[in-house]
Image 1: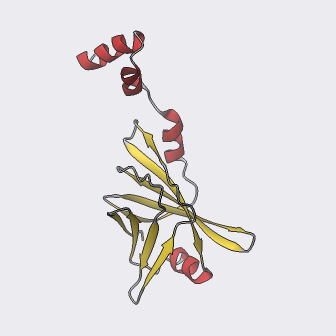
Image 2: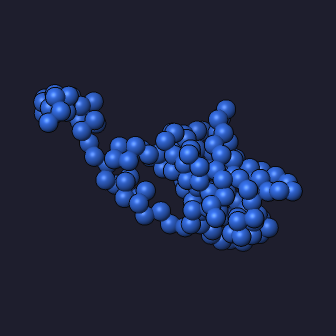
Image 3: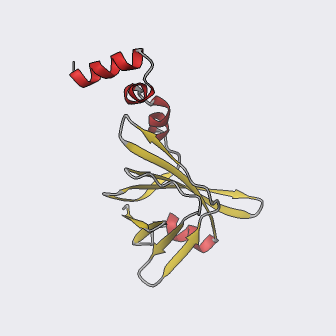
Length: 148
């Protein structure tokens, strides 16, 4: 057994919170990562972009799930840019507060973000007639290439 793990076990038994966190296996978040609803439309080395569409009160929503190794937490909202051969489409997130959940099992962050779409934008995503999706967050930009 690893000596540092043994040390953490002793510290956790004595009530050290940080040692308990290091030893904790997050099966709940890992289960959410393994059972994502929808379909994977784009991916890259930075992560994966999953979507499922939903219609509520005449509005069309795209509920996206992003798997990445980066915490995508923000209080200002986000936007995505869908890049096609002819043009770019920018779509702002439906909510401002976005929070990621971390799984220490797979060392992955899972982030759920909802966007309001037009039918044309849904068609572009469903038919995968785009080249890339850019996810903008604060000063960072994650790029996901269309999955064939």
